[in-house]
Image 1 (cartoon, one colour):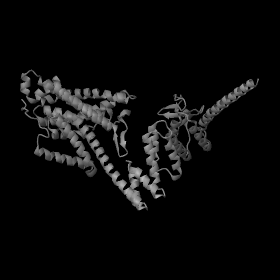
Image 2 (cartoon, helix red, strand yellow; image 1 turned 60 degrees about the vertical axis):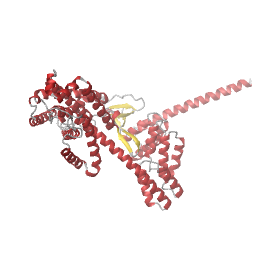
Image 3 (cartoon, rainbow, N blue to C red; image 1 turned 45 degrees about the vertical axis):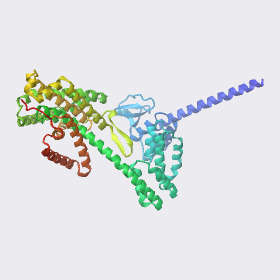
Image 4 (tube, rainbow, N blue to C red; image 1 turned 120 degrees about the vertical axis):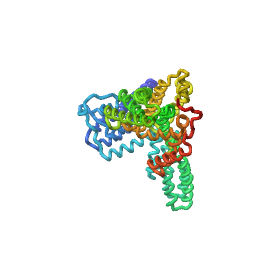
Length: 533
Protein backbone atom coordinates (compact mmCIF):
# COMPACT_ATOMS: atom_id res chain seq x y z
CA UNK A 1 0.00 0.00 0.00
CA UNK A 2 2.89 2.35 0.91
CA UNK A 3 4.65 1.46 -2.36
CA UNK A 4 1.51 2.29 -4.29
CA UNK A 5 1.28 5.71 -2.67
CA UNK A 6 4.94 6.41 -3.45
CA UNK A 7 4.45 5.28 -6.99
CA UNK A 8 1.39 7.47 -7.37
CA UNK A 9 3.32 10.40 -5.92
CA UNK A 10 6.14 9.93 -8.42
CA UNK A 11 3.65 9.68 -11.27
CA UNK A 12 1.89 12.85 -10.12
CA UNK A 13 5.22 14.71 -9.79
CA UNK A 14 6.33 13.54 -13.24
CA UNK A 15 3.02 14.60 -14.77
CA UNK A 16 3.23 18.00 -13.10
CA UNK A 17 6.82 18.40 -14.35
CA UNK A 18 5.79 17.52 -17.87
CA UNK A 19 2.85 19.92 -17.70
CA UNK A 20 5.05 22.71 -16.33
CA UNK A 21 7.59 22.09 -19.05
CA UNK A 22 4.88 22.00 -21.67
CA UNK A 23 3.32 25.22 -20.33
CA UNK A 24 6.72 26.91 -20.21
CA UNK A 25 7.41 25.93 -23.82
CA UNK A 26 3.98 27.12 -24.84
CA UNK A 27 4.49 30.32 -22.90
CA UNK A 28 7.85 30.90 -24.65
CA UNK A 29 6.32 30.18 -28.07
CA UNK A 30 3.41 32.50 -27.36
CA UNK A 31 5.78 35.19 -26.04
CA UNK A 32 7.87 35.05 -29.21
CA UNK A 33 4.78 35.20 -31.41
CA UNK A 34 3.44 38.09 -29.39
CA UNK A 35 6.81 39.82 -29.66
CA UNK A 36 6.66 39.52 -33.45
CA UNK A 37 3.18 41.03 -33.38
CA UNK A 38 4.48 43.93 -31.28
CA UNK A 39 6.88 44.93 -34.05
CA UNK A 40 3.98 46.09 -36.20
CA UNK A 41 2.76 48.50 -33.51
CA UNK A 42 3.74 52.09 -32.75
CA UNK A 43 4.71 51.69 -29.08
CA UNK A 44 8.55 51.87 -29.18
CA UNK A 45 8.90 50.81 -25.52
CA UNK A 46 6.93 47.66 -26.28
CA UNK A 47 9.03 47.12 -29.40
CA UNK A 48 12.20 47.34 -27.33
CA UNK A 49 10.90 44.64 -24.99
CA UNK A 50 9.79 42.58 -27.98
CA UNK A 51 13.23 42.77 -29.58
CA UNK A 52 14.83 41.54 -26.35
CA UNK A 53 12.36 38.64 -26.21
CA UNK A 54 13.07 37.70 -29.83
CA UNK A 55 16.84 37.82 -29.20
CA UNK A 56 16.45 35.51 -26.16
CA UNK A 57 14.26 33.04 -28.06
CA UNK A 58 17.19 31.45 -29.89
CA UNK A 59 15.11 31.06 -33.06
CA UNK A 60 17.05 30.51 -36.29
CA UNK A 61 15.51 33.55 -37.97
CA UNK A 62 16.66 36.09 -35.35
CA UNK A 63 19.84 37.18 -37.16
CA UNK A 64 18.01 37.62 -40.49
CA UNK A 65 15.23 39.54 -38.76
CA UNK A 66 17.66 41.92 -37.05
CA UNK A 67 19.60 42.47 -40.29
CA UNK A 68 16.40 43.23 -42.20
CA UNK A 69 15.17 45.50 -39.40
CA UNK A 70 18.46 47.41 -39.38
CA UNK A 71 18.42 47.74 -43.19
CA UNK A 72 14.79 48.91 -43.30
CA UNK A 73 13.68 45.76 -45.15
CA UNK A 74 11.35 44.40 -42.45
CA UNK A 75 7.62 44.75 -43.25
CA UNK A 76 4.30 43.41 -41.98
CA UNK A 77 1.17 42.55 -43.91
CA UNK A 78 -1.62 44.90 -42.88
CA UNK A 79 -4.37 42.30 -42.98
CA UNK A 80 -2.89 39.78 -40.50
CA UNK A 81 0.35 41.45 -39.21
CA UNK A 82 2.61 38.66 -40.53
CA UNK A 83 6.24 39.82 -40.30
CA UNK A 84 8.03 39.56 -43.66
CA UNK A 85 11.40 40.46 -45.17
CA UNK A 86 11.43 42.27 -48.50
CA UNK A 87 13.84 40.79 -51.05
CA UNK A 88 13.59 42.81 -54.25
CA UNK A 89 9.96 42.68 -55.31
CA UNK A 90 9.00 39.68 -53.16
CA UNK A 91 8.14 39.37 -49.46
CA UNK A 92 9.36 36.37 -47.44
CA UNK A 93 7.75 35.18 -44.19
CA UNK A 94 10.43 35.61 -41.53
CA UNK A 95 9.44 32.36 -39.76
CA UNK A 96 8.57 29.96 -42.58
CA UNK A 97 10.84 31.44 -45.30
CA UNK A 98 7.90 31.10 -47.71
CA UNK A 99 6.86 33.78 -50.17
CA UNK A 100 3.90 35.81 -48.93
CA UNK A 101 1.36 36.91 -51.52
CA UNK A 102 0.13 40.46 -51.88
CA UNK A 103 0.87 43.76 -53.61
CA UNK A 104 3.42 46.19 -52.22
CA UNK A 105 0.50 48.34 -50.99
CA UNK A 106 -0.60 45.44 -48.72
CA UNK A 107 2.63 45.70 -46.69
CA UNK A 108 3.97 48.38 -44.38
CA UNK A 109 7.52 48.94 -43.18
CA UNK A 110 8.23 48.29 -39.46
CA UNK A 111 8.92 51.70 -37.87
CA UNK A 112 12.27 52.25 -36.10
CA UNK A 113 14.05 54.90 -34.05
CA UNK A 114 17.69 55.44 -33.06
CA UNK A 115 17.31 53.76 -29.65
CA UNK A 116 16.04 50.57 -31.31
CA UNK A 117 18.88 50.66 -33.85
CA UNK A 118 21.44 50.86 -31.02
CA UNK A 119 19.70 47.98 -29.24
CA UNK A 120 19.74 45.85 -32.40
CA UNK A 121 23.41 46.63 -32.98
CA UNK A 122 24.34 45.46 -29.49
CA UNK A 123 22.16 42.35 -29.65
CA UNK A 124 23.47 41.48 -33.13
CA UNK A 125 27.04 41.67 -31.82
CA UNK A 126 26.15 39.36 -28.92
CA UNK A 127 24.42 36.93 -31.27
CA UNK A 128 27.41 36.93 -33.61
CA UNK A 129 29.79 36.16 -30.72
CA UNK A 130 27.74 33.05 -29.95
CA UNK A 131 27.15 32.03 -33.57
CA UNK A 132 27.90 28.42 -34.54
CA UNK A 133 29.92 29.62 -37.56
CA UNK A 134 33.53 30.35 -36.52
CA UNK A 135 33.92 32.79 -39.43
CA UNK A 136 31.04 34.92 -38.16
CA UNK A 137 32.42 34.81 -34.63
CA UNK A 138 35.82 35.91 -35.96
CA UNK A 139 34.27 38.85 -37.81
CA UNK A 140 32.26 39.81 -34.74
CA UNK A 141 35.30 39.77 -32.46
CA UNK A 142 37.42 41.79 -34.91
CA UNK A 143 34.64 44.37 -35.18
CA UNK A 144 35.11 45.08 -31.47
CA UNK A 145 38.71 46.25 -31.90
CA UNK A 146 39.07 49.58 -30.13
CA UNK A 147 35.42 49.62 -29.02
CA UNK A 148 35.65 47.67 -25.74
CA UNK A 149 35.45 49.81 -22.62
CA UNK A 150 37.17 48.74 -19.35
CA UNK A 151 33.79 47.79 -17.87
CA UNK A 152 33.04 45.46 -20.80
CA UNK A 153 36.45 43.78 -20.74
CA UNK A 154 35.54 41.14 -18.14
CA UNK A 155 32.49 40.08 -20.18
CA UNK A 156 34.66 39.72 -23.28
CA UNK A 157 37.20 37.63 -21.36
CA UNK A 158 34.32 35.36 -20.26
CA UNK A 159 33.35 34.92 -23.91
CA UNK A 160 36.97 34.10 -24.79
CA UNK A 161 37.11 31.31 -22.18
CA UNK A 162 34.24 29.53 -23.97
CA UNK A 163 35.92 29.78 -27.38
CA UNK A 164 37.69 26.77 -28.97
CA UNK A 165 38.67 28.01 -32.44
CA UNK A 166 42.33 29.09 -32.65
CA UNK A 167 41.74 32.02 -35.04
CA UNK A 168 38.89 33.40 -32.95
CA UNK A 169 40.99 33.01 -29.79
CA UNK A 170 43.78 35.00 -31.45
CA UNK A 171 41.28 37.70 -32.38
CA UNK A 172 40.11 37.82 -28.75
CA UNK A 173 43.74 38.23 -27.64
CA UNK A 174 44.16 41.13 -30.08
CA UNK A 175 40.99 42.93 -28.98
CA UNK A 176 41.59 42.42 -25.26
CA UNK A 177 45.28 43.44 -25.47
CA UNK A 178 44.33 46.49 -27.53
CA UNK A 179 41.97 47.59 -24.74
CA UNK A 180 44.63 46.97 -22.09
CA UNK A 181 46.95 49.54 -23.72
CA UNK A 182 45.09 52.18 -21.67
CA UNK A 183 45.40 50.26 -18.40
CA UNK A 184 46.81 52.22 -15.42
CA UNK A 185 49.35 49.46 -14.63
CA UNK A 186 52.49 49.76 -16.82
CA UNK A 187 53.17 46.01 -16.53
CA UNK A 188 49.73 45.26 -18.00
CA UNK A 189 50.47 47.62 -20.89
CA UNK A 190 53.85 45.94 -21.47
CA UNK A 191 52.19 42.52 -21.57
CA UNK A 192 49.61 43.86 -24.04
CA UNK A 193 52.37 45.26 -26.30
CA UNK A 194 54.12 41.89 -26.21
CA UNK A 195 50.94 40.26 -27.59
CA UNK A 196 50.21 42.99 -30.14
CA UNK A 197 53.78 42.94 -31.53
CA UNK A 198 52.80 39.68 -33.28
CA UNK A 199 49.52 41.01 -34.72
CA UNK A 200 49.53 42.11 -38.38
CA UNK A 201 46.83 44.75 -38.29
CA UNK A 202 47.02 48.41 -39.49
CA UNK A 203 44.87 49.68 -36.61
CA UNK A 204 47.08 47.95 -34.06
CA UNK A 205 50.16 49.45 -35.74
CA UNK A 206 48.63 52.94 -35.54
CA UNK A 207 47.75 52.50 -31.87
CA UNK A 208 51.25 51.26 -31.01
CA UNK A 209 52.73 54.30 -32.78
CA UNK A 210 50.62 56.55 -30.56
CA UNK A 211 51.70 54.63 -27.45
CA UNK A 212 55.37 54.84 -28.47
CA UNK A 213 55.05 58.64 -28.57
CA UNK A 214 52.62 59.49 -25.79
CA UNK A 215 52.91 56.88 -23.02
CA UNK A 216 54.17 58.18 -19.67
CA UNK A 217 56.36 55.15 -18.94
CA UNK A 218 59.73 54.94 -20.75
CA UNK A 219 59.77 51.13 -20.78
CA UNK A 220 56.34 51.06 -22.36
CA UNK A 221 57.38 53.64 -24.96
CA UNK A 222 60.51 51.65 -25.84
CA UNK A 223 58.59 48.37 -26.11
CA UNK A 224 55.95 50.02 -28.29
CA UNK A 225 58.62 51.57 -30.55
CA UNK A 226 60.28 48.17 -31.00
CA UNK A 227 56.92 46.57 -31.85
CA UNK A 228 56.18 49.38 -34.35
CA UNK A 229 59.52 48.82 -36.08
CA UNK A 230 58.85 45.10 -36.40
CA UNK A 231 55.28 45.53 -37.65
CA UNK A 232 56.28 48.27 -40.11
CA UNK A 233 58.78 45.86 -41.73
CA UNK A 234 56.07 43.23 -42.04
CA UNK A 235 53.64 45.77 -43.51
CA UNK A 236 56.22 46.83 -46.09
CA UNK A 237 56.85 43.19 -47.04
CA UNK A 238 53.17 42.38 -47.49
CA UNK A 239 52.62 45.65 -49.33
CA UNK A 240 55.31 44.56 -51.80
CA UNK A 241 53.55 41.23 -52.33
CA UNK A 242 50.26 43.03 -52.89
CA UNK A 243 51.85 45.38 -55.46
CA UNK A 244 53.40 42.41 -57.24
CA UNK A 245 50.02 40.65 -57.29
CA UNK A 246 48.26 43.67 -58.77
CA UNK A 247 51.08 44.04 -61.29
CA UNK A 248 50.79 40.40 -62.39
CA UNK A 249 47.00 40.70 -62.64
CA UNK A 250 47.33 43.86 -64.76
CA UNK A 251 50.02 42.11 -66.80
CA UNK A 252 47.67 39.15 -67.36
CA UNK A 253 45.07 41.53 -68.77
CA UNK A 254 47.72 43.04 -71.06
CA UNK A 255 48.79 39.57 -72.18
CA UNK A 256 45.17 38.63 -72.94
CA UNK A 257 44.72 41.89 -74.83
CA UNK A 258 48.00 41.61 -76.75
CA UNK A 259 48.22 37.90 -77.49
CA UNK A 260 45.59 38.02 -80.25
CA UNK A 261 47.35 41.01 -81.78
CA UNK A 262 50.66 39.12 -81.58
CA UNK A 263 49.17 36.56 -83.97
CA UNK A 264 47.62 38.93 -86.52
CA UNK A 265 50.38 41.55 -86.36
CA UNK A 266 53.28 39.19 -85.79
CA UNK A 267 52.33 36.33 -88.10
CA UNK A 268 50.41 38.16 -90.82
CA UNK A 269 51.98 41.62 -90.57
CA UNK A 270 48.54 43.26 -90.38
CA UNK A 271 48.24 46.40 -88.23
CA UNK A 272 44.73 45.75 -86.96
CA UNK A 273 43.37 48.93 -85.37
CA UNK A 274 40.03 47.13 -84.84
CA UNK A 275 41.62 44.68 -82.40
CA UNK A 276 40.21 46.59 -79.42
CA UNK A 277 36.72 46.34 -80.92
CA UNK A 278 37.09 42.52 -81.03
CA UNK A 279 37.58 42.69 -77.26
CA UNK A 280 34.57 44.97 -76.99
CA UNK A 281 32.44 42.43 -78.88
CA UNK A 282 33.57 39.71 -76.47
CA UNK A 283 32.58 41.86 -73.49
CA UNK A 284 29.15 42.56 -75.02
CA UNK A 285 28.71 38.83 -75.64
CA UNK A 286 29.08 38.34 -71.88
CA UNK A 287 26.50 41.07 -71.29
CA UNK A 288 24.04 39.39 -73.68
CA UNK A 289 24.59 35.95 -72.14
CA UNK A 290 23.76 37.36 -68.71
CA UNK A 291 20.58 38.86 -70.16
CA UNK A 292 19.65 35.41 -71.49
CA UNK A 293 20.47 33.72 -68.14
CA UNK A 294 19.75 36.47 -65.58
CA UNK A 295 19.63 34.14 -62.56
CA UNK A 296 22.79 32.17 -63.43
CA UNK A 297 25.68 34.65 -63.75
CA UNK A 298 28.30 31.94 -63.23
CA UNK A 299 26.96 29.65 -65.99
CA UNK A 300 26.45 32.68 -68.25
CA UNK A 301 30.09 33.68 -67.76
CA UNK A 302 31.39 30.19 -68.55
CA UNK A 303 29.20 29.97 -71.68
CA UNK A 304 30.38 33.44 -72.69
CA UNK A 305 33.94 32.21 -73.26
CA UNK A 306 33.23 29.97 -76.31
CA UNK A 307 30.45 32.31 -77.44
CA UNK A 308 32.76 35.36 -77.41
CA UNK A 309 35.46 33.40 -79.24
CA UNK A 310 32.98 32.44 -81.98
CA UNK A 311 31.42 35.92 -82.31
CA UNK A 312 34.73 37.82 -82.45
CA UNK A 313 36.38 35.12 -84.56
CA UNK A 314 33.61 35.15 -87.15
CA UNK A 315 33.64 38.95 -87.32
CA UNK A 316 37.44 38.78 -87.77
CA UNK A 317 37.12 36.29 -90.64
CA UNK A 318 34.49 38.50 -92.32
CA UNK A 319 36.81 41.53 -92.01
CA UNK A 320 39.76 39.60 -93.42
CA UNK A 321 37.80 38.19 -96.35
CA UNK A 322 35.99 41.42 -97.21
CA UNK A 323 38.71 44.06 -96.65
CA UNK A 324 42.15 42.99 -95.47
CA UNK A 325 42.91 40.33 -98.10
CA UNK A 326 42.91 43.09 -100.72
CA UNK A 327 45.47 45.13 -98.75
CA UNK A 328 48.28 42.68 -97.96
CA UNK A 329 51.65 44.36 -98.45
CA UNK A 330 50.17 47.82 -97.94
CA UNK A 331 50.42 48.39 -94.16
CA UNK A 332 49.39 52.07 -94.17
CA UNK A 333 46.18 51.35 -96.06
CA UNK A 334 45.51 48.36 -93.78
CA UNK A 335 45.88 50.63 -90.76
CA UNK A 336 43.41 53.18 -92.15
CA UNK A 337 40.93 50.51 -93.23
CA UNK A 338 40.91 48.74 -89.85
CA UNK A 339 40.61 52.11 -88.08
CA UNK A 340 37.49 52.80 -90.14
CA UNK A 341 36.15 49.34 -89.29
CA UNK A 342 36.70 50.02 -85.59
CA UNK A 343 34.58 53.20 -85.86
CA UNK A 344 31.86 51.26 -87.69
CA UNK A 345 31.78 48.55 -85.02
CA UNK A 346 31.61 51.13 -82.22
CA UNK A 347 28.69 52.91 -83.86
CA UNK A 348 26.90 49.62 -84.51
CA UNK A 349 27.16 48.71 -80.83
CA UNK A 350 25.92 52.18 -79.83
CA UNK A 351 22.90 51.76 -82.10
CA UNK A 352 22.07 48.27 -80.80
CA UNK A 353 22.83 48.55 -77.05
CA UNK A 354 22.91 52.35 -76.41
CA UNK A 355 25.99 54.55 -75.89
CA UNK A 356 25.81 54.09 -72.11
CA UNK A 357 28.06 51.66 -70.29
CA UNK A 358 26.42 48.42 -69.15
CA UNK A 359 27.26 46.54 -65.97
CA UNK A 360 27.95 42.81 -65.94
CA UNK A 361 27.20 40.83 -62.77
CA UNK A 362 30.18 39.10 -61.22
CA UNK A 363 29.48 35.49 -60.09
CA UNK A 364 29.57 34.91 -56.36
CA UNK A 365 32.58 32.56 -56.66
CA UNK A 366 34.62 35.40 -58.17
CA UNK A 367 33.62 37.96 -55.53
CA UNK A 368 35.39 38.65 -52.25
CA UNK A 369 38.99 38.47 -51.16
CA UNK A 370 41.48 35.88 -50.00
CA UNK A 371 42.88 37.18 -46.71
CA UNK A 372 46.26 36.02 -45.44
CA UNK A 373 46.28 38.59 -42.62
CA UNK A 374 45.07 42.16 -42.11
CA UNK A 375 48.15 43.44 -44.01
CA UNK A 376 47.52 41.27 -47.09
CA UNK A 377 44.23 40.51 -48.82
CA UNK A 378 43.96 39.58 -52.51
CA UNK A 379 40.83 39.96 -54.64
CA UNK A 380 39.53 36.71 -56.09
CA UNK A 381 38.43 38.10 -59.46
CA UNK A 382 42.01 39.08 -60.35
CA UNK A 383 43.23 35.68 -59.18
CA UNK A 384 40.80 34.01 -61.61
CA UNK A 385 41.96 36.31 -64.42
CA UNK A 386 45.62 35.34 -63.83
CA UNK A 387 44.62 31.66 -63.98
CA UNK A 388 42.49 32.29 -67.08
CA UNK A 389 45.40 34.04 -68.81
CA UNK A 390 47.68 31.05 -68.12
CA UNK A 391 45.07 28.63 -69.53
CA UNK A 392 44.54 30.73 -72.69
CA UNK A 393 48.29 31.01 -73.24
CA UNK A 394 48.83 27.26 -72.75
CA UNK A 395 45.94 26.45 -75.09
CA UNK A 396 47.25 28.79 -77.77
CA UNK A 397 50.77 27.38 -77.52
CA UNK A 398 49.38 23.85 -77.92
CA UNK A 399 47.31 24.95 -80.92
CA UNK A 400 50.26 26.54 -82.70
CA UNK A 401 52.75 23.78 -81.86
CA UNK A 402 50.64 20.62 -82.08
CA UNK A 403 47.73 21.21 -84.45
CA UNK A 404 47.58 21.25 -88.26
CA UNK A 405 46.42 24.86 -88.18
CA UNK A 406 49.48 25.82 -86.14
CA UNK A 407 51.77 23.99 -88.56
CA UNK A 408 50.24 25.78 -91.54
CA UNK A 409 50.38 29.16 -89.79
CA UNK A 410 54.06 28.70 -89.00
CA UNK A 411 54.78 27.53 -92.53
CA UNK A 412 53.04 30.53 -94.12
CA UNK A 413 54.65 32.99 -91.72
CA UNK A 414 58.16 31.63 -92.40
CA UNK A 415 57.99 31.24 -96.20
CA UNK A 416 54.70 31.85 -97.94
CA UNK A 417 55.92 30.81 -101.41
CA UNK A 418 57.34 27.51 -100.18
CA UNK A 419 54.16 26.83 -98.19
CA UNK A 420 52.08 27.38 -101.32
CA UNK A 421 54.32 24.99 -103.28
CA UNK A 422 53.73 22.38 -100.55
CA UNK A 423 49.97 22.67 -101.05
CA UNK A 424 49.07 24.98 -98.19
CA UNK A 425 46.18 27.30 -99.05
CA UNK A 426 47.78 30.48 -97.72
CA UNK A 427 44.68 32.64 -98.29
CA UNK A 428 42.54 30.36 -96.16
CA UNK A 429 45.30 30.15 -93.54
CA UNK A 430 45.30 33.97 -93.39
CA UNK A 431 41.56 34.04 -92.78
CA UNK A 432 41.71 31.41 -90.04
CA UNK A 433 44.71 33.09 -88.41
CA UNK A 434 42.92 36.43 -88.36
CA UNK A 435 39.83 34.72 -86.96
CA UNK A 436 41.95 33.02 -84.27
CA UNK A 437 43.53 36.32 -83.20
CA UNK A 438 40.14 38.04 -83.16
CA UNK A 439 38.58 35.16 -81.19
CA UNK A 440 41.27 35.38 -78.53
CA UNK A 441 40.63 39.12 -78.32
CA UNK A 442 36.96 38.24 -77.73
CA UNK A 443 37.70 36.02 -74.74
CA UNK A 444 39.99 38.77 -73.43
CA UNK A 445 36.86 40.93 -73.51
CA UNK A 446 35.08 38.35 -71.34
CA UNK A 447 37.81 38.74 -68.72
CA UNK A 448 37.69 42.54 -68.95
CA UNK A 449 33.92 42.52 -68.36
CA UNK A 450 34.62 41.21 -64.85
CA UNK A 451 36.79 44.21 -64.01
CA UNK A 452 35.00 47.14 -65.61
CA UNK A 453 31.73 48.19 -67.17
CA UNK A 454 31.01 47.19 -70.76
CA UNK A 455 30.83 50.10 -73.20
CA UNK A 456 31.42 50.97 -76.88
CA UNK A 457 34.81 52.52 -76.03
CA UNK A 458 36.04 49.56 -73.99
CA UNK A 459 38.60 48.41 -76.57
CA UNK A 460 40.09 51.85 -77.17
CA UNK A 461 41.68 51.84 -73.74
CA UNK A 462 43.70 48.70 -74.53
CA UNK A 463 44.73 49.06 -78.19
CA UNK A 464 47.85 51.13 -77.40
CA UNK A 465 48.81 48.80 -74.55
CA UNK A 466 48.38 45.81 -76.86
CA UNK A 467 50.75 47.26 -79.47
CA UNK A 468 53.27 48.16 -76.73
CA UNK A 469 53.21 44.56 -75.45
CA UNK A 470 53.69 43.07 -78.94
CA UNK A 471 56.47 45.47 -79.97
CA UNK A 472 58.28 45.23 -76.62
CA UNK A 473 58.08 41.43 -76.49
CA UNK A 474 59.11 40.83 -80.07
CA UNK A 475 56.76 40.69 -83.03
CA UNK A 476 55.20 37.25 -83.49
CA UNK A 477 56.74 35.70 -80.36
CA UNK A 478 54.14 34.45 -77.86
CA UNK A 479 56.64 33.97 -75.04
CA UNK A 480 57.82 37.52 -75.68
CA UNK A 481 54.21 38.69 -75.43
CA UNK A 482 53.82 36.92 -72.09
CA UNK A 483 57.05 38.34 -70.62
CA UNK A 484 56.38 41.83 -71.99
CA UNK A 485 52.77 41.92 -70.70
CA UNK A 486 53.73 40.84 -67.19
CA UNK A 487 56.76 43.18 -67.14
CA UNK A 488 54.72 46.20 -68.22
CA UNK A 489 51.95 45.38 -65.72
CA UNK A 490 54.38 45.12 -62.80
CA UNK A 491 56.29 48.24 -63.88
CA UNK A 492 53.03 50.15 -64.12
CA UNK A 493 51.98 49.19 -60.60
CA UNK A 494 55.42 50.00 -59.19
CA UNK A 495 55.40 53.49 -60.73
CA UNK A 496 51.78 54.41 -59.99
CA UNK A 497 52.22 55.21 -56.26
CA UNK A 498 54.98 57.71 -57.06
CA UNK A 499 54.02 59.12 -60.47
CA UNK A 500 50.26 58.59 -60.75
CA UNK A 501 48.44 56.43 -63.30
CA UNK A 502 48.79 58.73 -66.33
CA UNK A 503 52.42 59.74 -65.81
CA UNK A 504 53.33 56.09 -65.16
CA UNK A 505 51.95 55.13 -68.59
CA UNK A 506 53.86 57.97 -70.23
CA UNK A 507 57.11 56.95 -68.53
CA UNK A 508 56.66 53.35 -69.66
CA UNK A 509 55.93 54.47 -73.22
CA UNK A 510 59.11 56.58 -73.25
CA UNK A 511 61.09 53.66 -71.83
CA UNK A 512 59.79 51.34 -74.57
CA UNK A 513 60.65 53.88 -77.28
CA UNK A 514 64.20 54.11 -75.94
CA UNK A 515 64.40 50.32 -75.70
CA UNK A 516 63.23 49.89 -79.30
CA UNK A 517 65.99 52.24 -80.43
CA UNK A 518 68.50 49.74 -79.06
CA UNK A 519 66.65 46.54 -79.92
CA UNK A 520 64.23 47.21 -82.81
CA UNK A 521 62.98 43.60 -82.86
CA UNK A 522 62.01 43.50 -79.19
CA UNK A 523 62.96 41.26 -76.28
CA UNK A 524 62.60 37.97 -78.17
CA UNK A 525 63.16 38.58 -81.89
CA UNK A 526 62.13 35.94 -84.41
CA UNK A 527 65.13 34.15 -85.81
CA UNK A 528 65.62 32.84 -89.37
CA UNK A 529 62.38 34.28 -90.62
CA UNK A 530 62.30 34.55 -94.39
CA UNK A 531 61.10 37.55 -96.31
CA UNK A 532 57.42 37.26 -97.30
CA UNK A 533 56.91 35.83 -100.71
